[in-house]
Amino acid sequence: MVLIIDPQQSGISGNMIIGALINLGADHKIVKDVMEVYGSHFGEVDVEIVDVNKAGISASFADVRCSDHQATGYTNLLNILNNIEHEKVTKTILEFAKKVFQTVAIAESHVHGVDLDKIHFHEVGAADAVADIMGASYAFHELGLHKMKVYGLPPALGGGRIKSEHGNLSVPAPATLEILKNVPATGGPVDYELTTPTGAALLVNMVDEFCEFYPLITNQKVAYGAGKLDLEFPNVLRIVSGSLPIPTDKISILETNLDDVTGEVLGNTMDRLMEEGALDVTIIPTIAKKNRPGHLLRVITKSKMNNRLSEIIIRETGTLGVRTMPYVHRHIVDREIIPVEVDFDGNIRTVRIKVAKIGKEVINSTVEYEDAKKISREMGVPLKDIIRIINQKVKVEDD
Image (tube, rainbow, N blue to C red; front, top):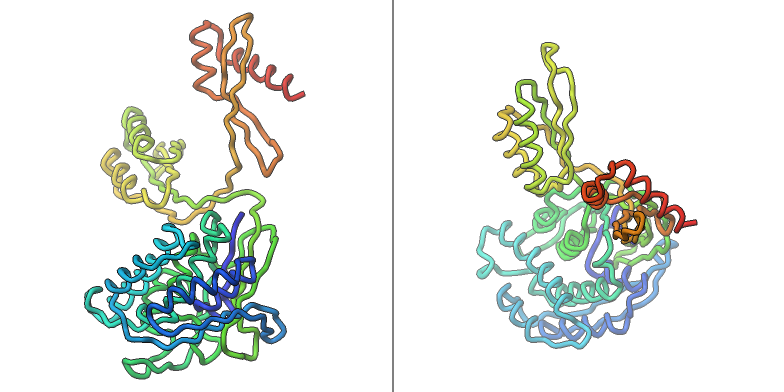
């Protein structure tokens, strides 16, 4: 299962996320209670969940009415949250919410150039922000969305100017921009603040991967959460849940051309890369500069390993540079290892079979190489014959 958070049209705020999650199926009574219980420790909070229509789109709206007691420092905020008890708020939910608060706090700290424990918070200390973040965190986990792959589309930021304690500021707010570093976003399409710091912080903590367009999915449910403003277009946040026909994985590819490296060095480099966590290493014969025979070394890896594996390539081969393709998608099928007992002329051996599936459909099965190799050596039978016998056994059982 996958989830898409789509704030392209009208941006994203805390109450829009809550509305969309309730529209998706979260229990509105419990969400309301969580918001009021936590928010009441920072101010007077009253929440009403209603169905509304925004320019022709039916949506759920979390109407949060509150007044703050006083501004709250970041450390004090965490202490208060830790001491509040709610039977529906698990440790996992609370830790997620605290990550969201931390995201806002760090952004405010960077913008104002003040340490976290000294900063005067405008969003983090507000009762409505506490209610929004706790309510959204609960609903997100109640629906099990934290276990899904979550995609995010570029949020609309809005435009114009807003009033703040620091004067008249242009939209987006400085904290919003800080939170959305390295996240694709777009200005407009109206002169209002569409994406708030709270909404941005929830977005970046919920999303696993941002993309410009919808990924290939089978849509199963669409939900809408309404914003407060009435605009000329539907002021709604859209959330789509569905499934991927074939699961995808995000990887990086590292490459370098080598024309003066021996086979021994290539083999050792390949071993080192696999030992350090590369997903796959390929060495391809090629013709390099000045028509010299050489090799293309290609490494598939997780993005977090790029720097480490690039350093190994440079140190082991002496190459002057490594090309990096940092964000590459690959389609991967579900795999299952099934143990099968095979009779080799009275000698019963257990062999693992790798089964590949798309959904529930089996598309391929292969013998685990190491198992077949071990049996081949122990029995003194060629590997190809061992694999053939195993495949015949598996085929008979399938039939």
